[in-house]
Image (tube, rainbow, N blue to C red; front, side, top):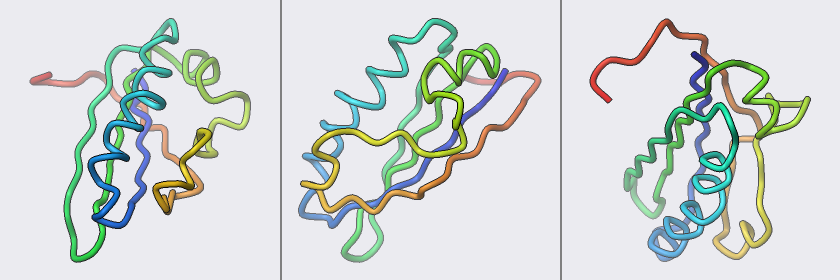
Length: 103
C-alpha cells in the first residue's frame, strides 16, 4: 500500500471555505480513482494560519500515477486554490507501508 501525504495552509479567515473546497477537489478526485483505498484530512490552527494535512491511501504506485500523473511527486493543484491564499507544499511524499491499523 502507498500512503501519499500533502500539506498546505491558508489564512484562518479562509479555513471553512478551503475545507469545503478540499473536499470537492482533492478528496473527491482521489476517491474517484480506481485503486484509492481511503482519504484522511486533518486541520490544525496555528496562529493566523489553518494547516491542512491530506493523506490518501493507494493500492499501488500505478493508482497514484492515475491520480497525480507521471510526475507524481509534485502536488496536485486545482482551479480556485488561489482564492483561499493557499500556500501549498510543492512536493508530496509517497510512503510504501505494509498496512494501516485502526482505520
